[in-house]
Length: 538
Image 1: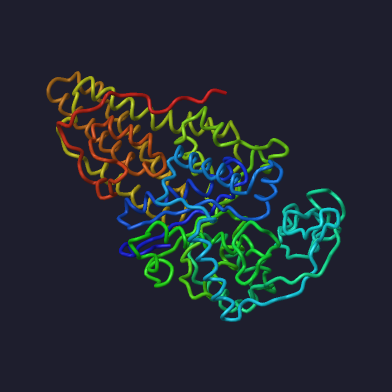
Image 2: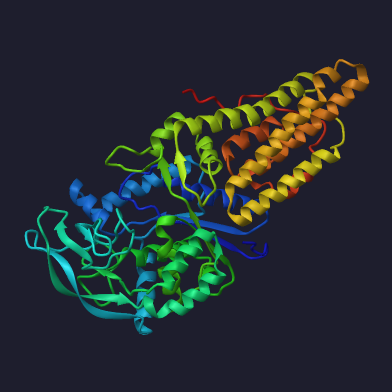
């Protein structure tokens, strides 16, 4: 999707649920979003990048009860954990909030009241699981049983082991209490529902115009073609945003969580105003980065809620494929998981960022294996890019110490311009593997150019040969400069190192793509060559 360059852009990443530590499966959303933001800025866009911790819902309450602490303590612990992980990985949000903030409570209540006022919310008596032993109703993950639709083992609000359908209260067969393990019974209780079914025609039209990835639109269209069911938007919990006018109900977490996108924008711009241009006045483009498991929420429930409450609608939804390990699903209980902090204790963050986008198309499943990770690092980062940087800089520093005199040749500028166009197209298509492939093709061209011209022979052929070798080196350095600019969004820390090795004194993070075609300055002192990447041993 091509966004006009003069239009402000708000990019959001799906909110991590803070009831446990970050594993590498989480990062398939956050790293590509950060790459997208960095590249848009290089293309001249005015971009805001926000996310935050999803802090409400039954899993956090269950985690708190299991640890004997309050939900607030659970949230505080893992909120800080995710902030630390993102900082280490250079996922650089303009603002990272959390949904239990006062502003999110206020904004959620305002939006729910607006939906009530416009008759999009109504009361309904439902049958809900109740545990006689514990003496409490069992919302969401307090109850487990069989899915009404496919018969698979399911939790209270989702058939996570079977058909994947969202489940409303009462849609569990043979319910059991997750607290004590005893059978539960169904009792009638009054809850509040959002009239999602009335938005079918709007959603059909909206999805036809929605940008982003095809997997998000197609998945959502299939649901809209079927019967859209109204959503229960209240739960029997004390932890959460209070439902207006009720003392014993909170809003469902999937109501207040996406509203966090709005409240975080408000918090970012607090005192300066201007959040309305993103969320009320349709003056900006809104791009959501999510995982495929929450397409329904972001492409159906969320835009319907925004439409009903008279807010701006997202322009694009970018859905990443899920992550497996050695062909198997992530499973904490079975130990099939790689924790991000443990990974980063051993390997450089930039190599993980690179792998997450280089290994597969953004919308396809990514199957992590140590073999594929080591091959990407050793063959591409060490063998192609690292080799080019070290060969060129070692030769240049030894024989010239500075950038030699000479003009940039047409074939070099042509190669850079071609890769630049491919990178921009990749960004507009949300295909970050294509972005990486284009830049690495430029690095490969640099290796072939350097090898073909053989400056180590030229420099032995008198003044004329030395002059020609200098031109070759300057052109090779121009290619390194271009690779550095184009690859900085993917590997910001390593490209900062490389930028200074080639003698650049500016800030590579703020350099625009226009700098690609500006010749590197002759006479510029070169830095000391250092190996950028280490081989990953078996």
